[in-house]
Length: 359
Image 1 (tube, rainbow, N blue to C red):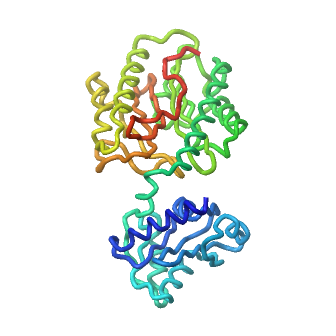
Image 2 (image 1 turned 90 degrees about the horizontal axis):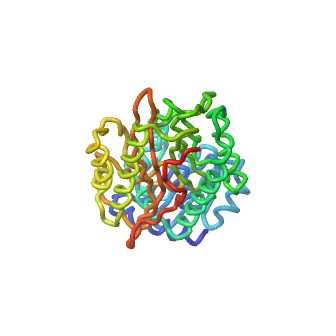
């Protein structure tokens, strides 16, 4: 999508003046990909008002030519250093850099180079652009979510007591790959029984038992874009009263969070819409994380939906809504969807049913 990459770079150039920099050194690989299409593991980008220069090393000469044909290239393993020197040689006096990505050691190295420009923090200029997705990006996320949901639907009939968390996680990941995913969006969470009360539990050899809550948090990766979905089930028998109670609270909180998604809505207020439901039910202390986050080239990106979040949400922003209740030593419930904020109401991308199914 070279035309889109050109448009993105033009939008970035419009932010250089307000940021009081002459150029920007981009070192975060997701941002390099967003602006050029290049997917190598070593790269940096220099964006000036009239030039774009991609630096990478000799392993990626051919790949960079194919993926980023419309930008200049420098082949040098020390990407950031090479571009900083180039910036100084071409008259850049104040060079913005990604302070959230560049290490202290690399920053010191850049400052120490001959004729290096003054370095200035820029506050995530590219991430600001990435928050609002174009049609192509939304379609890739939509496809990643469809692959994820289809894989889960295939998996559910073969979940049974005696299978381990690791086995189920591998099975689900393989199904996503078989359905066309390029990879998994993150390490799949399969958490059974008391492990389901651990928000980011890593699968173990614990066997699924009759009566367990089973929490599955998963997603496919498709052409660089991520899906994120969580569903919670009961295995082998009807849910106990406490399991049904916390599930119903989380489901209602999730509905409230989804309804609060609208262009211009406050990030903190969206979180509160769901969190207040959980608090009113007496489980406020057991909802220990933010309501959600942006999704795109990274599984966690801006904006964050949480108690301390500042700002508002825009149309065409994909986010997760994922309240949970976690009762230590007993079990937990999380329900999560990926949605796109839209003027006519949020578009639900993860369409697997959210009922408390007995598997």
